[in-house]
Length: 403
Image 1 (cartoon, helix red, strand yellow):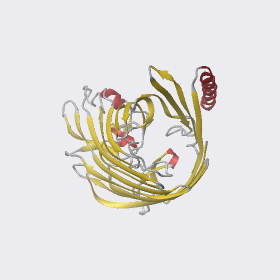
Image 2: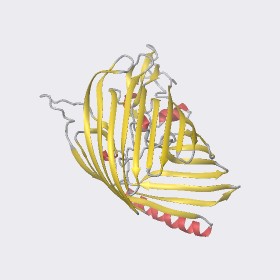
Image 3: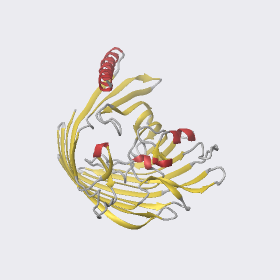
Image 4: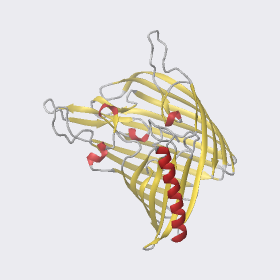
């Protein structure tokens, strides 16, 4: 019933938009892709999107005779990132150019696959180098600079990966680009007590995520810095029944760069994050103190260092390498009751290489990815000690028809 309803809704929207565009001087452009990914992993992994979005290998889980239950390979074919979208240009509004984007894929959610999911839905106005976006699109921390990979993770967990509802301002001229945004959470929410994700933690804080960046750019290169702040309220009531309003505050600092000339592109990013587990990466927080009577808790975020470098060359035949490194730096204070993703991971490293054939409307790609994660036991400050390593070999082939 849901599939039928959504299909009918899309058809009605398409017909209505076509009619509206013809009658009211709107212009529109439909686009999309049909994508198939087949991939092999040498062991079980922390992943999403039915395994298509690779994160990092799972740690050891030993059976009674010492065999690793996660040391099992797998093979999968995935095509739910087939997508359809429309770009719309409308009449001017008080001298501002107007436009909008709506884009769907068939990813569904974490429990139901193969149903329509909204990727982008926003309106935009622009004038004299300034633009304002309102709606859901890529998180601005995600697209300061992005890597170029066949893998759907586009560099996560070293690279932030998220789409989110936002109000986003940008000014750009021939030398500078400034951006500022207020962001809420949608598809992937922050993690709270019991490692449960919920948008309520940010909503109850009454402060959206805040972002700002400044780039210097010319024809071939971009250099920039960004800052991101998030304050969540994990609980409004203690286990003892008392009202509480304690927050987890996280500040993320980032630097990025890209050089592009002729067939060569070199891009990279490094940042120090706090409690950024809603970006398909590692992060979280811990409890620093608990009031014995009321149960009110105070918190400190875990700090994670992320860096990646991507070098690509070619056009019809385009290949390149990606290298990423991540390190868990723990908290600034002693913490207990750790909450988050990968709180028992000390560090992680990835090296991957790919080659793609690009012809009009078609792309075929082959990618090899080798990732190692070091697991251990968090100490009093959340830093992971007494580590062991596990590795995953991943081979991906993708075919895309784009229109």
